[in-house]
Each structure stands twice: as structure tokens, then as C-alpha cells.
Amino acid sequence: MSELQRKWWKEAVVYQIYPRSFKDSNGDGIGDLRGIIEKLDYIKSLGVDVVWLNPIFKSPNDDNGYDVSDYCGIMDDFGTMEDFDEMLKGFHERGIKLVLDLVANHSSDEHFWFQESRKSRDNPYRNYYHWWEAEKGTPPKRWSFFDEEANAWKYDEQTDSYYLHIFSVKQPDLNWENPKLRQEIYDAVRFWFEKGVDGFRMDVITFISKDLPFKELPEKYNGNFVQYYAEGPKLHEYLQEFNREVLSKYDIMTVAEGPGTNTENVLDFVDEDRHELNMSYHFDISNLGHKDLAKKLMLPEGWDFREFKEIFIKWDKVFDKKGWGTVYLGNHDFPRMVSRWGNDATEFRELSSKMLTTFLLTMRGTVYYYFGDELGMTNIRFDNIEDYRDIMTINLHKLISSEGGDLDEFMWSQKLIARDNGRTPFQWNDSENAGFTSGKPWLKVNPNYKEINAEAQDTTENSPLNYFRNLIKFRKENLELIYGKSEYYDLENESVFAYSRELNGRKLLILVNFKENEATVNVPFDLEKAKHLFGNYADFDGTLKPYQAVILEV
Ligand code: TEU
Ligand code: CA
Image 1 (cartoon, helix red, strand yellow):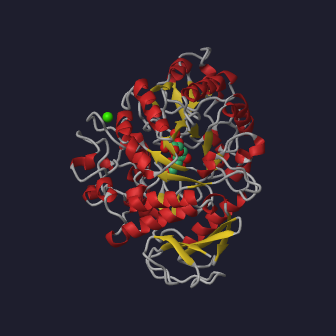
Image 2 (spheres, rainbow, N blue to C red; image 1 turned 30 degrees about the horizontal axis):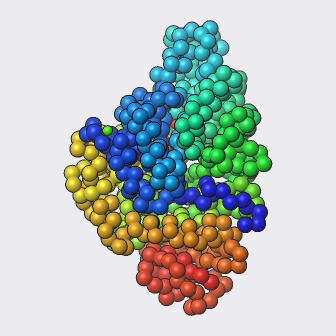
Image 3 (spheres, protein in one colour; image 1 turned 135 degrees about the vertical axis):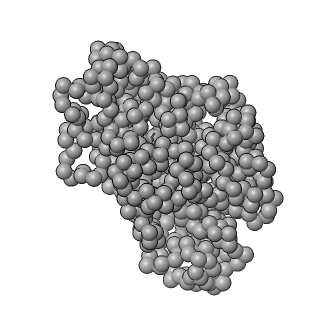
């Protein structure tokens, strides 16, 4: 392996579990750690190497755990520390590593630090957060994701000051400028590493350094707060300190959630010589097809496939010599992969879901695979705002409504991309509530669980579930798919993503038809002589059938 060093986290398929929606063990309608323990053998049966759990720490759940009130305690809904220890042991016994979710840009307003911080201007915890004293006038405009008025400053009467919250009012931003706060975060992370946890996904870690003392937004960022938030002056200083003091001491993996990262700046985070993080994931793909990103409105004409290809290719090239990339097509912040990038109509659902799985597992980069996508679970597409549980949808609805905006357009867009589409309970079997809970699920179960569920797919040879399992095996046996050099072909093709992966003289060609039409492809290989190794149809005759995906040896 010439320039690239082999690492376990580069070879991993990371399976992401949204614990709230995986398996409820006690009938309260909320997934929990004992539910995960019950399903360890299912997870093992997939062949995945790493599990990433969304936040499981104590939280009042304003944003489903992304508002942490105690970084070293387990959320009451999810169980106890004993449950956690048992779960971690269960993963490790099965050879699976466990990655947790560090939410360190902000905490909950119910965290002890914030409770103290807001008490008085001279409280010892005051500088754990960002405050703006009211006598200085109204603070410069800062945009918030989840605020009903999109305002990131909240006035707090007790000390006649505003606090910063880039997310909801219950998610005040932590002040990384304060070395004490940084040490608190490092201590919490060490606590989990000492227990044996294998890494962290780091929530909006790109936002931790603020542009103190909060200037007016520079002109060039107008309308692009995300970019601005991600370019704080001390960001890399903090990440290097974090690495030096904590991360470098353990054999773990780290992945930044990287809003605001782009192909020009991402190596600053993941170039191994800089000693910051291992990987980062970007938003360029998920941002496709939007008419208005802040309000989450979608274009009626949909997304552009050639743009999709260009983005993947451009990002892949960044890591040719340094760093390491990530690939994903869905997570808890996005809709279901098959609904967004494939076709969830009955006749194409399974085919296109396998097609997307093929794509993900053959691209270069660590694969982040979202639970339920192995079954081809689909968007639920709520008609009523009352069915949504996500603060983002609920507060954007309020915002658009108070501005007199077009709520029909918003509700239509939410059917395509609302986060709750990807958060509905996992579909285990065809019994009531898909076998997720014996109680009332916290979020409605997708009624299609009768047809789409794990139990049925487990025993069906060519189900999406078994396809995923087999392809993971295939990938492990063909290192070309992990470390192989990538080359791209027929860029203009409107239907097919065509690329090869080559290692030590062996070359695999991957052809993926993203459309429901048949398609041909222009590649510099003799397809008649190519050997069909893997695919979602029985064979390949040179023309790609609807949503056909093939792996060929050329
Ligand atoms: O997401 C941060 C983030 O950028 C999202 O708000 C994203 O833009 C949006 O979800 C796209 O639809 C992280 C977490 O992944 C998310 O679940 C949390 O709500 C958020 O941070 C706050 O912690
Ligand atoms: Ca429960």
C-alpha cells in the first residue's frame, strides 16, 4: 500500500444507530440501550465494523440528545451506566467498535454550567458560555438554525445580557476560549475512552471557535452564516490541543461533522501531519436540490445527477495523497437514502436501494451507513405538522408562518427532506409497531413495515438486507474497494456513475445506473470480456437495466 497507511478506521463500515428509534425494551415508546443489547446479534450479522450512536448522554431532549446536560451520565430514557457497560462489552465481544457522539459546540441550558453561568455576571461559570451585556446595545445579527425567529441571541433577564445559541434557545454555545471549559470537555472524553469507547463523531465541531468580540458579519459572508461559523480564528489551535492532550493517547477514530468544510480547507482538519482529526464529512451532497437552504425549501425540478457526480469526484480527489475521506447518503439529519437518491416506488425500491448500497460500498473513503437503509426503509412523508417531533421542522414552520410565507411549499419540501423521515422506528417485523415497541412509539412507525421489515428480509435470499451483508463481505475480500486508486469515466453520462478502483495491478470497474431508464456507458474497457463479480441483477449484458449496479473485473 504505497503512500497510504492501512488503518482499521479506513477499512471500516460504520453503522449509525439513532438509539431513540432502534429498539424499545421497556414499552415506553422510546428506543434504549437494552434494546440495542437485544439486537447485538443482528448488528453483528450485518458484518459492520463500527457502530456510531447518536448522543446517549443526559439530556432534556429539546433536540433529541444534542442538548447535553451531563456529559458523563446516561440519558434517563436510554437506561443506566450499567446498561452502557454491558452494551459496550457486548459490542467488543463481537469484534465491533463503538463510537459515541460528542456535542461540544453547545450544551443544554439545563446543564449545571449554564444554570450557574446565568446566575450572575461574576459567577465562576460565567465564561463557560458567550454573553453579550445589554448595555452594549443589541448584539450583531447572528443566525440560528432552530430559533423560532432565526435569532441566535437570547436575552436573559437575570443578568441583563444575551447569550449565544446557534441552535435552539435550549442549546447555548460553549465558550472554548476558556481553558477551563476545554479541560472539562477533555475530561469527559477521557472518561469514555478509559471505559474503552473507540472514538467520537464530533457534532458541529467546525463551529467551536467564535469571532470574538462578535463583529458585524463581514460582507462576503452575507447569507452564508454556516461558512462564517466554520472559520473561527482559533478552531485549529483548539483541535490541535485536543489531539495533543487527549485524542493522540488512544487508538481511536475521530470524525468531524463538518458543516462549512470544503475541498480547499478540509485537509486542514484531516491531513495526518497536522494532528487534528481522522475524518470529516461535508454537506455538499445533502445540500443538492435546495431552493432555500436556511428554510429547507426544495426545487420542484429535483437534484442534478451530474452535479452529484462532480461533487463526489471532487471530494475524492482531495484525499489522493493525504488525509482520508468519508462517504454517506443519509443520516439522522436527512431523509431516507432510497427516497432521496433512489426511487421508493414499489417496483424500484429494492433495486434502487441495492444500487445505492453498491455505490456507497465501492467509493473510496470510510462508509457511514445509516440504520434502516439496509432494509430500504423510506420517507414517511407526514401530511400534518402535528406528526413531526423534530424541533427543526416545528420551529421553521413557526418562522415561515409568522413571516406569512408559503406553508404548503414548506410542508411539501419537508416530505422530501425532513429529518423525521429518517428517524421513524426501525422496522423489525410485521407485528404491531413493527416490533419496535409494545407501547406508543415516540414518532409514528412507517405504515409500510408490513412489507419492509428485517425479519422478512432476513430469510429472503436476494433482499436488500442480504445484499448489504454480502457486499460487506465482498468489500473485505477485495481491498481494491478500500485502498484502490480511483478513476472516473464518462462524466457527461446522465444516468451512470462509472469508476474503477485499482490496487496492485488488479482493476475493478463499477457501473451504477441511478435512473429508471436503461443506459449504456462509454468506458475504455471491453465490457464483453469483463467478469461480472457482483451486482443487483443476475447478470450484465453491456446495457444497464433500471437502477442496475455492477462490479466487474477488467
Ligand atoms: O447538525 C448540525 C447541522 O449542521 C444541522 O443542523 C444540519 O444543517 C441540518 O440538520 C440539516 O438538515 C448537528 C446534528 O447532527 C443535529 O442532529 C443537531 O440537531 C445539531 O448538530 C445541533 O446539535
Ligand atoms: Ca424504552
